[in-house]
Amino acid sequence: MRQDRRVDQVAPDLYRLTSGGFAAPHLIMGDVPTLIDAGAPGRGPAIERELQAAGIRVGRIVLTHGDPDHVGGSDHLRAVTGAEVCAGVAERPFIDRSGWPTLPLRRRLLLRGFFRGTPGPTIDRWLDGSEILEGLEVVPMPGHTPGHLAFDWKGWILAGDAFVSGGRFRESLGLFMLDRPTARRSIERLLARAPRGASSSHGLPADHATERLQALVDTWR
Image (spheres, rainbow, N blue to C red):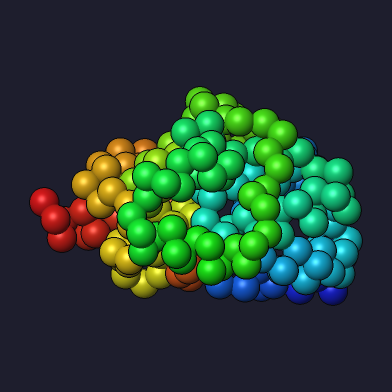
């Protein structure tokens, strides 16, 4: 990686990008440089420029879930890098839109508005949640959406929208939460992993993640 990189380092070989829009993508510099999430619709070129400025060409893109601010730049980045795009198989109806008619009306309207008429992302590989991708462990975290995934990189959790990281961990806003009881059970299972740190898409990276997750879980137990 070039010394003039613009991406922000979070932990060894883990970086947070600034060009994704509403939701921050993360970058894993493992054996296969891997982008976690791909920003909002129209943000693909900006992410491409940020990666180019750092001298990085990603080989894989993994999506935490199918919300537009996480997948909007995926097809552009897939086209310019040739990266394999992966997502959770339980998220497939949400990503290919076959499951949209079952969503609450408010959620459907939000999705249509944010996607701005663009198609859903192309997925090359569907993950069942048991995979380890060159050291990046897939962690199923259903609740925010049915097939939401988080990822564990050397004890750091890349949480997507499973919760909001920062000085105090918080649950995602109810407006965007499809199944809060399931999301809470997912967070409780994550707590049992005793993670070192966590970084979500809409919150700041934070260490001491186990203690912060425990404080969050204590709010509903």
